Amino acid sequence: MKSVESLLPAHPFRADQYLQTVQEQQVRMFGDIPFDKALDAFSAYMDAQLLQRGAKGQEDETFLARKHQAMVGDAAAKHYFFQQIRDFLRAEPVYRRTQYPSYYRSLEEAIFEHLYGFGPMAAWFREPTESAMVNGVDILFGVPGKNTKELQPYRFDSIEQVEKLVRTLTLKDPSTQVNHKQNWTQVDMLNGTRVTIFTPPLSETLALVFRQYLFRNYSFEEEAKMGTIPAESVEWWKLLSRLMLSMLTTGHRRSGKTTFLKVIYGARDPNLDVLTVERGTFEAHLRRDFPERAAHIIALRSELDGMDSLFPAFLRSDAHYILVPEIRSQEVWLAIQSRERADGWLGSYHGQYVANIPLELAHLMLEGQANLDFRSAYIRAAQSVDVVIVMGEDEQGKKRVLEVHAYDYDPDTESFTVTPWMRYHKPSETWTFHDEIPPQLLTRLRQKVQPQLLQAFKSEFAALASAFPMGMEETSVRRLSIGGGKR
Image (cartoon, one colour):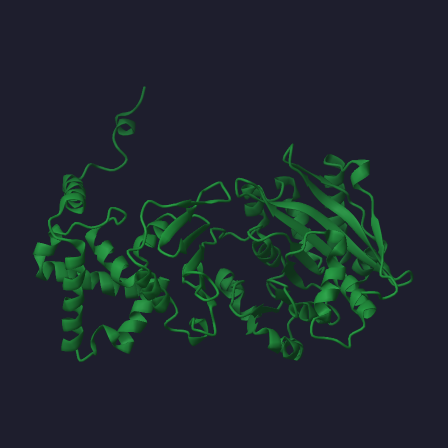
């Protein structure tokens, strides 16, 4: 028999809250004060308040800085504006009858978001999906469980409203401001949202792409929970991360490459110093996502033409290894040179053809290096990669580790092998394993890794390969010759 307590609601009924909700809905739909009139009245009220305090109205630098902080998510700055709106409505109660757009939850929110926030995009921030986009005045939200975006039934009032949003977002940092020379930029909000902005003439019209990194628990347990890896492999991944091999995640955009790198980093010794190097904007945010390790993280940012000078900085930083969130061009030099100083670099790359990765990295090394010998570059690239992890995203937006391969350079034959370690099978949604460790790699591990750690890794690997074996046709090892140096 059910108890009386089980039949009662979880929270007591509040008649006052119910009446307030009904009244707000009535005002939102049937209020007799136009929204634009309320916005003008509040703007005039704010100007008067600021002038009274000795400021220069809403163009005052302090006010603009607070406006920027509120937009990027500073709670104190937002509270200031909401308090000003409440004071205005108390002073001018007639505006409580303002009819406002239905995508706002309250009149206070409507006034704030329309004048100082994201306008109708505020609806996405309340219940964010992985991504959203403003294209001109149109608004699209990512569809949960799908790799697509859906056009919303509301839009910005004008392109000028979008331009004002861009100006506020890029106000504080001159390096993020767009102009006739710089037609795209990125802004990182305090909640982790990354906003990429494209402006004419690079784009036909203003376009803003919002990415919300919903992944917060950077652990292999969480990756298994999300279906990125099998639960049975969690301990294997932890041991693999601690071997301090040079590891590269590859795959198309949105495949989870950077997130997986951060998970690997999270499984490594927290006392090791790491240097992150990025081009243009900070995206890895290790210091933000691993605050307990912040003292061991040095984050550097450089433009492409400054990459050459960063390796001496790495040497002087005394870091144990380097993390390059995205290798697109000359960043490859930092990864490869760091390997020649210490093991364990981490990076991501957009290539997916595993046998070609050392070759592609060699071509990147040659960009802007006309005097560099191609064969030497190919050898250095092949020597510098130990493990490649191929990532993918399915139709439902789920990230998967599709393949894992071990690389092994043989100086006697000037060739390298690619050995499959792990493979995902889409029809059955399962993974298989092959526990062959290439000979040169195994020799290095025996020389540099504690015997207990190496034995634990080998035992865990053998158990996975026994429980989930690859078929004979999947276990073949590919050997690729460096060749005579033809490009």
